[in-house]
Length: 252
Image (cartoon, rainbow, N blue to C red):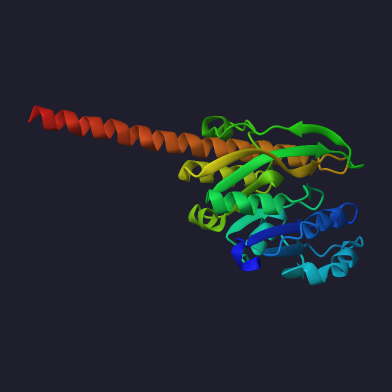
C-alpha cells in the first residue's frame, strides 16, 4: 500500500514550544499515513521541548536540535532533506485535521497539483474552534496585495514547483509563506482549492505581537509589493517595446 501512495514530506520547526508541540506531533502521527517523511528542526530549545521530541523521535525521518537564525532558516534546513512528492510545513502550535494526509494524497493521484489548499479551523489554546476560515478561490491579484486567500497549514505543494520557483527566500523571516505562494501562483496553472478542512491554526496569547515583529511584517509586505511593481514595470516596458517594433515594421 505504501508504494501506491505519494510520499508526503512534512516539516515542523520549533523553539521552546513545549506547550503545544506534543499536540502538533500527535496530529501528524495519528494520520497513520504510510508514506510520510516527518522532519523536525528544533532551535536548541531549553524549556523541555527536547524531552517531548525525544519521546517521539522514532517517528521522525530526520531530527536535529541546534541553534539557527530563525524560522525561515530552520525551514530551509528542513527542506534540504525532503524527498517526498508533496511538501508542506506545520507550525509547532498548529494541527492537522484527522485523515488530512490521505485526502491530500488521493487528490494528488487524481489531479497532480502544484499547489492544493483547503479550509482551516482557527482554534484557541483550549482547542475550541473560534471560526472556520473559508479559503477563497485562487486569485493572484488579491494575494499579491496581501489579501489572504488561504491559511498556511492548509496548503500543500509539489516538490517540483517548490524548487522550480527557488524555494523559501531567506529575506522573509515572517511572510516567507506569502512570498513563496505568490511565486507558485505566478508560475503554475495547476493550483486547486478544496472545501475540505485540512488543518487547525491556533490563536493564543503567546503569539508574538511585539512592535519589532509588526514593523518587520510591514517591511516584508512593502518588499513583496515592490517586487510586484518591478515585475509589472518590466512587462510594461516589454509590451511597449513590442508595439514600437511593430510600428517600425509597418513603416517599412
